[in-house]
Image (cartoon, rainbow, N blue to C red; front, side, top):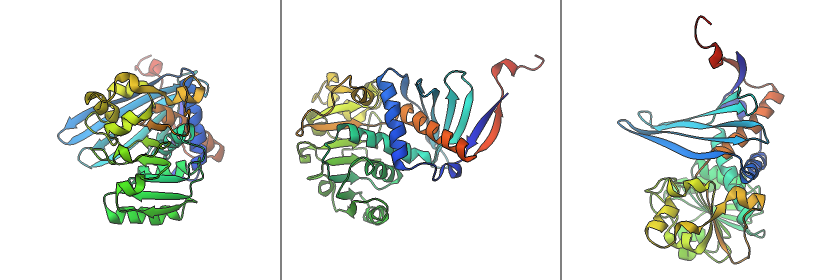
Amino acid sequence: MTDTLFLTSDDLVDLADPEDYVDAVREGYRQRGAGAAAEPRTKLRNDDPPGMLTGYMAILPETGVMGGYTYGAGFGARDAWFVTPLFDAESGEPLALLDGAYLNPFKTGAAGAVGVDTLAREDASTLGLIGSGAQARGQLRATAAVREFDSVRVYSTTRENREAFADEMDAIVDPTVEAVETSADAVSGADVVITATNASDPVFDGELLEPGTHVTAMGQYDTRKHELDATTVSRAKYVLDLRARMDRDAGSLMAAIEQGVVGPDHVHGELGEVISGDVSGRESTEEITVFDSGGTGIETVAAAHMLYERAREAGLGTEIEFTPASEAMPGR
């Protein structure tokens, strides 16, 4: 038997600030750049009731942990549940089991923020945000921790949602947050653009991007859906979280390749390779850069370990027991 710490979403509240998630996730991607193992998501679809079961994994050897994310979404309840197992990378024993609902927007937001911090201009001051859900909130809070923005312009298709988002987030982050009428209003003149939507088609015209803009796209990871148009992809230095995603679920890139606008060699590198210095990042103030952040086990494991350590220090969580396989057969 081994004791494993079970952490509910309530246990995780207030354990870390957005900056803490960003630091943990940046370190995770640095290890990925140094060769840490990670695999893109595997998605199993169900037709009746409609839903999907998804999972992905990563090992962070320098941190000494491994794990991933498994979640069911859709089905009869039309909701999602996230389960995050964390293992010791030396012994293989389970360290923790986390309810991933609370940490999900924070760790995903941190991945986007690391992309911004790695690829955006240092003097970026205006953020255009498309989307007004939980993921958009996570992206804004994390990204505001890595750049000193003066203003944030947010657009989503429902006026009430974008206005409520602007009111809420304006009280939380330092830059002024305002709702705008169109995606063009959000993107035009922005130094950083973040897309966090469930849209199936491109959410802005790539011709609107000014030289020097950075784009983080994280709202879709499906072969048939893409937030970015081929113009945006072709104009940009294109960085993925995992290169293996490029022909699996990097929808914007795949669509641009299918249209013949770019080829597979358009991928500049992985985020971890840029962080580790193996691949160049931004090389001029005029470059347009894109970080395609479809989600990986890297940010999940990195964030989960940080929360696990803090929960142990705070005496939070409930111990549960796991039986090793060697003891599983009766009569041994």
